Length: 114
Figure 1: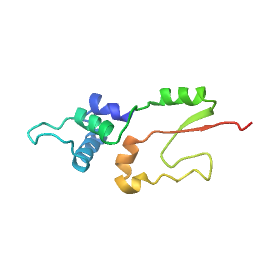
Figure 2 (figure 1 turned 45 degrees about the horizontal axis):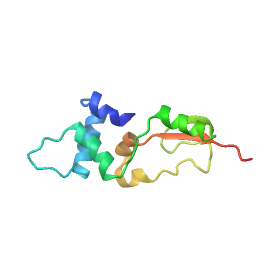
Figure 3 (figure 1 turned 180 degrees about the horizontal axis):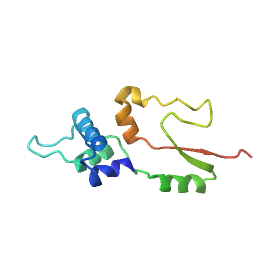
Figure 4 (figure 1 turned 45 degrees about the vertical axis):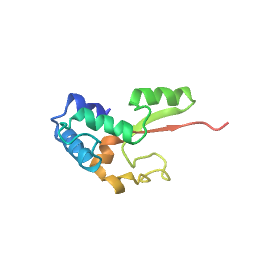
């Protein structure tokens, strides 16, 4: 999960660039004297967008499988085995590719119709 890298790899260029972008675009509501940390970026991500749960690959795959989906595969943003589903992501137009790539996890699964 890339967001966890805010905690264990904060000096990585991709991580620090994302943290800087996130703090500039969506500053947390804090006193100006409060230091802005990677933890604040993570919490701001969670709270300001109404997230209730952040999934990792393993958890989401298990839940999809339990719901009857098969052939669960991790994909890159805008990648799909189905030609009608490829290149449909639009969020990067609003926030840019680096932030979208950092925040987004894509799993593709199929479910048989009976």
